[in-house]
Length: 477
Image (cartoon, rainbow, N blue to C red; front, top):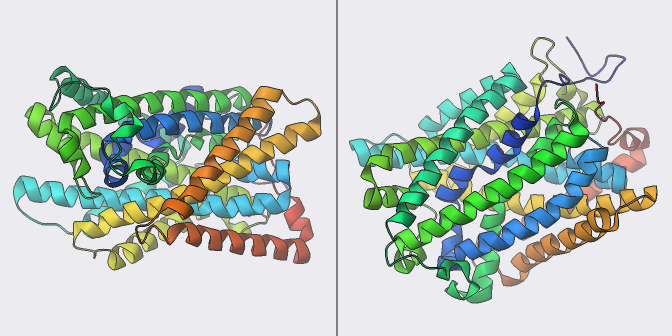
């Protein structure tokens, strides 16, 4: 057994992951099918028929934002991901704050997918067979599967994710091609790719942009494998670039196909509980309906598994360095997994699903599960936006201090990424008018203040602990 109290720092299993698995880690957390099937209808009440345009803008912004992340991943591979990068670039206090924001972002990914699986299957089973199973009961199965896979080890989790990813991408692309080849509802048009198609103007584009950004959350997922991937200084940055670009192109094409397939009237009437891809299958290829259901559940499961893989490694890294209880750094000798971190995240996921579902629609009504996804998804996106800002500022500071920074890659692009992401966050405060979304930026601001207070307390009372932030990096062995 390996524990956090042994002489050597607890370590994950080295060289157990290759480049393809690292790409899948990031791509599967983004979840091409689940993000295509379920995120646009949270954007369309705001950005409407122009939602594909919002995704194009988000793709460009995320590629720019990823530049600073990739540069830091190349010099500081670590399971701590952003927590490590920010600690190295901006100091341990900022690293602790980034870790706190990361916890909100990453720890909410598994429960929102658990809830969405339950809500989606409740409605699907009811429509197909006429009987109603409460979503909370259905959600128990993916919750158990997620926990077991995490305990089995990284290889089991990533093998499962790779299989699910290939399946979902093939199905969603096939359906999009069928819709496009059929000519859509009113012909093939480029109108959804223009901002003028937004029924709510600029304000609608801004709010729709947050749910588009949610679709890209996880592009950095491979960074949490920094201590397990082979040749991490090359493969982690490459995995980020390949996954972001490939998944972004899939989003734009498939969501454009969705818009032309349904037409402006149906698109502008979509809500978070709608299942538009089920409708597209019924309209254009009824034989695809079972496959759409399979792809939906497959993608949600892949995001759940990979999101869980990421957050338990961040908890492990912070526990190893004393930022969180050291018990979280316990590594199971047989499987090489952070077992206590897995148990903690599993319990946290169950509590979020039950608590948020109970107050936002109920545990038997599918609206409860859908709202867990919508509300917590909005919150986690806002949290990760601030982490992206910190990571890019950290890259600038780190390479400037070293004195060998490349101006475009390590200065200009990270600065532009930080500005664009900060602008998206601030725009939510200025432009957002629909509760409860109006409260959510302030919830993150309050959490940010709490993280700052915690970091200052650590600096005053346990400076030796704070000084170790980001100290453990991966080797090339």
